[in-house]
Image (cartoon, rainbow, N blue to C red; front, top):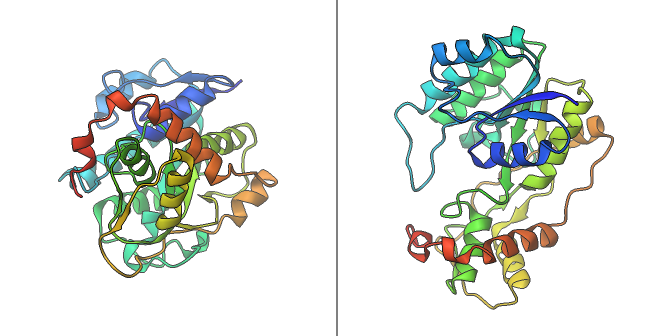
Length: 293
């Protein structure tokens, strides 16, 4: 059993990891009040009497259509990462949850490989923060960068995240809305937790991995799957014609490290998520589903 520190445990990724990995490892998942990663003194005090086998760094500040971009997004993301690595003597390894945004969204291309990293410097704050952390992490043997693309599942922000938003819209009798159709590589969060568990228990040989399915799917296809699992016949609205820029990664390096991996079929994973939201229908305000559509 490995001692784990999970940062960002109140967020989507961190909360799911803490919940699922606690069955197999000793998990510490502090709140921000217990560990403020942006506060150097708070981090110093936290690590004074603690040691961990692996740190899962899932804490992040990001923007979306609802929140906009915080003026401190870049600085806070960098500060959290560097305050952690300053205390690398207090843990054995750091699994850093990066993002395909570090490839620079202006230059995304289908099924990007790990060696595409560094070809471009991101112009946006979030992508640049992930880029800098990944670059610095290359110099530290204890850091492995787990580059995420699309991840979906319970606890995500259903107001803006497409699959959850589609499920909640259908449950409330609303049409599914796409701003524009696009090929997107979505990974079920339960699969992410299973992959992370393997990487914890068997140290991977490479320093960076694209953690994705390698099989991008059209948003319109995902909308149809939501409709199928719901047993209803919702309308689907596509606001802009044409196709958006594909967002996908090549996962062959990951599959080699894992010795293969069986991803949950989308109809099964989306079905589970739909049932989860249906059981919580009263907690979902329909007005918040309409904020941008």
